[in-house]
Amino acid sequence: MIDTNVSLGHWPFRRLPLDDPRSLARRLRSLGIERAWAGHLDALFHRDVAAVNIRLAEVCERSGDGYFLPIGAINPTLPDWSEDLRRCHEVHRMPGIRLHPDIHGYALSDPVVAELLTAASARSLVVQIAVQMEDPRTKHPRLELTPVHLEPVISLSATMPRLRLMLLNAGRLLGLTPKRVLGSGTISIEIATMEGVGASDRLIEDLGSDRILFGTHAPLFVPESAVLKLRESTLDADALRAITQGNALRLLQS
Amino acid sequence: MRSRTTTDQATTVLDSSPYRVWDLHCHLSGVDGQTPTERMAQLIAFADRMGIERILIFMGFPFATDPSADDLRHQNDQVLEALAHWNDRVLGLAYVSPSHVEASLDEIKRCVRDGPMVGIKLWVARRCSDPTIDPIIQLTHELDGLIFQHTWLKAEGNLPGESSPEDLVTLSKRFPGTPLVCGHTGGDWERGIRIVRDHTNISIDLAGSDPTAGFVEMAVRELGAHRVLYGSDAGGRSFASQLAKVLGAELTEDDRRSILGGNLRRLLRPILMAKGRIP
Image 1 (spheres, each protein chain N blue to C red):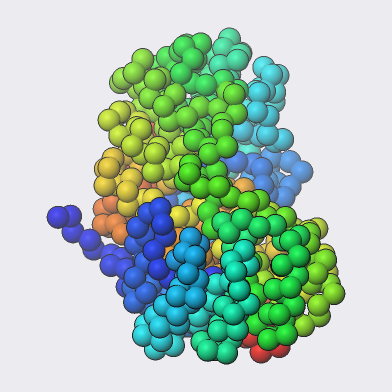
Image 2: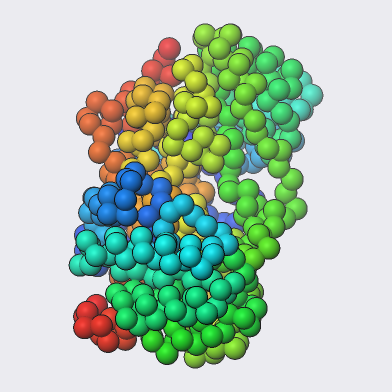
């Protein structure tokens, strides 16, 4: 299995049982997860995002023998974000980037988002939009979040056939019928926050199996959750292979 | 230092079969089916896949936040229909409301005293700190029924009648010897656990929030495992994600066994024994 939604570093509001990369890798491996795409939690509030991406690259190299695949952060509200993008691609050789519009405080309709997606697409980078990091009902009272509206990137993706766009933690926005919002385009999703009995079955029924990826949102979530969700559903072998591995590999290689 | 016998952050528990899992918190919503019986069959099929021995259901469909007296009766009839076909696997709580005290007392007599249900569910019609609720609590306690109060602490603000854990503590002070269940642990569990900590007649329900890491560990550290109850809030939530909160937590085997079913069976033992149903 490939986990497409992991974070390294420390969650700012609570110590998490698996927030040490080696412990996290051991636990994920024990669940049959062979590789994890990892962002870094420092990216949420640090303004020196270039340093965060350096640390991410280093910790991925140090921990777990290539287990973690680094996904760099880009904050397009910061000056000269395009240099961060260049370094992610050219210096750190990262296969993708992660955006946090709710915490970084911008709308996906902002023109800079189109500019960023165009640049990422030209570099063949996977773009992950972390729609939420936690249930907004339980957020820290001092934290101001910008609600994420997906329509602008859905429209943009329709005009950018090479864009490899993926949504993380989109369960509250999409429910178990994501096609109603995402349409028949190419935007992918992962399952960490998709809730309801038999959630994976219902997602496949709605969206097909080739746009759904496995993700745990560890260490914020207990990683067993995503694994058990697959057991709760009645996926056939082909769908299971696509969700847990094939779709992630295709997204990286396409 | 307590001994940790299972998950040491390197290994994990994915199999619920060694445990007698009783799920405190399920609904007839969030699953397919035209009738309560059809929906119950769906829930049971998923419960079977996840190794869950027995589930408690409450409220019918569609959800009614401020139900009329007729709504209460109708929704309890839906649950009774579901129980009739699955009485070896499913237990029910009567949906009652402090906005309709007399009708609620009638429902408790009909569904709990004279029927198969084992307690009551209180939702968001009126906060449980309001003494209007007292006759409902009193009668349910006299029948040894489980008293389950939904609670939340929403960052954007609760509904006007939606109880917080503080409201439940206020109620608890009027009924210090009565076991109460703090539904959802207030959602914001880090605050919810602290609010109920000193009120030892209050147990907490793990259901219906994201499978955030550390929830169960904090609950056990602050309250003791004997006050922590596994529930899912299925079908709106996955049995899987909510079971993972317990299976993926750093716990002793004894604690995990208690949380996954032992504590609920202990709370229900008096009323189940009275109904001739050994837990």
